[in-house]
Length: 285
Ligand code: SAM
Image (cartoon, rainbow, N blue to C red; front, side):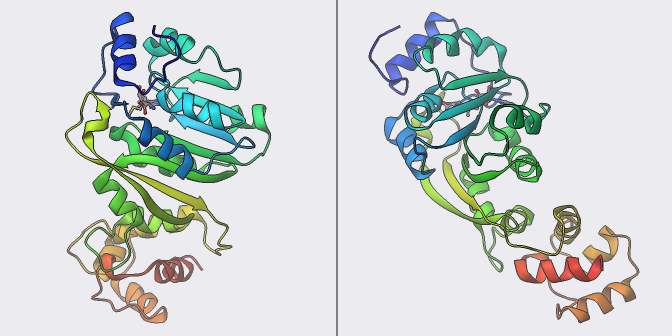
């Protein structure tokens, strides 16, 4: 391996891939970053300082991990692909503040892994997420009993737009409302497909979400049920969606909607976050 060169150099990535005869797995969403500006942009956009503990999902060959290790106090990375073990052992060998757990992030007891290492310290999540499970990873992480300070994730551009969309826009969907429960997301970087190896078919974007305590009276489980029901049938009215999705009589739903001043003919995409909170409160009171 070429010494004194950063991992995001395209030649470096090529060399590592060849040295280890590594085969990219499409099904694991393996598109590795090969652009220093983007790698640095993600880490500075996440506001990583030498005080921070970072959780990275999917380090790949360690490109983003390297930049995180240079800036953070501690990095814990979770990688499902065992074939990357020898590569990561070499590419990150100079760092003593990085630990990799080789497991599926959705199957791992992350709460315990984090508690054992860091207690209840605040964690910044930074990741170039595998596209096939972006939403499950984000929603699962946020619902765990982990003290997450912020999430900074590369996702497909369309998903990024949905994540930060406001009501009455075409991108407003269940993930927009769900995320708002935890904080206000913003797109901090647009990322062209040319900065990945192999090059994916779609562009990407990096979303940053600072987690805030909104002191809401409704729990995320109840809130999620209401959002899921509301967005379950895109062209149907909120009356129909809630009635069908939550198995409630239409008359009962009419009364609920009237109590929280939501028109029964509204569509899910026209209802604001605050109205969803009121609706959830009223349904489960
Ligand atoms: N961070 C690297 C980069 O930016 O170049 C690689 C990002 S690549 C888009 C996604 C990574 O997530 C791959 O290394 C893949 O093997 C890993 N991955 C996929 N599914 C995973 C899962 N369920 N749990 C943990 N890692 C996963």
